[in-house]
Length: 306
Image (cartoon, rainbow, N blue to C red; front, side):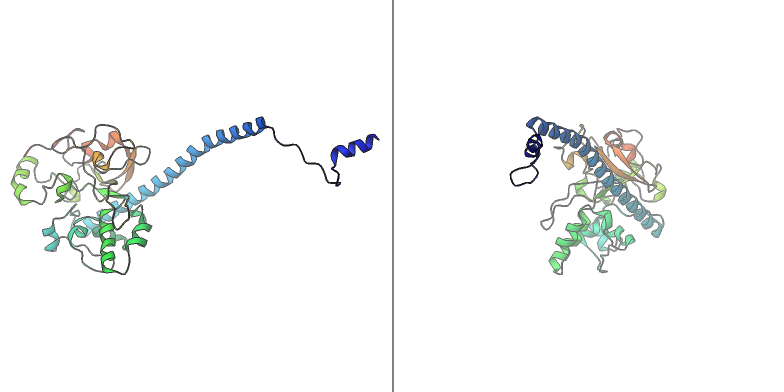
């Protein structure tokens, strides 16, 4: 009798083993709480690892750009590429930009730096663009109009912007320092700032290990329906006066408030220096004008009035 009762406790009427008992609500809640704790620990770690991967890629891109910049100077008797060439310089052939098909470019696509440097890497977009796939798949088509959009997108949206005001000189009226190639200001700038107030030759870099050439950027307008995560220029925190926001960047900070510099790596931005090395710089480091202007004598340096 006792043996039979034990069998009834362990089998059902069809002779199959009885189902084990279900978890209690308390046990389920404890399991969920443990999973929540593990996720709280793992997610930030995974996010940090992902950011480190992106940061490493950006550092590699910055070093590549620095190499191309110095290669250009070597090929031009030590003269660095004009930061933002004037249209006259492009028309006269003083600055030449060629696309991947051997076509000579004009207008803004030639005035900006990318098409003048990317040839040193066999026109391989590689890691120079954060959204390379979007540029290639959406804009690089067989139609003439879309091909022009592709060339324009390459010129406007690289992941690192050039310190074009002080490295190479700028004719870009949008960066607030278009004095380098404007003959109207030639005499005034020479008297007030000297001949080498911006870098024309590699030898003008008095502090090459500190002078910023490229920096992580953002702010390009959508092109052909594609939003580009980059920008061709970065502008200094000061010129005649303060130009950047005085507050540390936050999610609501606009590109214009930080000179198009993107502090996307835990409030740091990647910078490529005049000697070709790259490093991550925080807000305070990026605001130091000695990193931007070859003749800056203090972190809050402003250009003398004309």
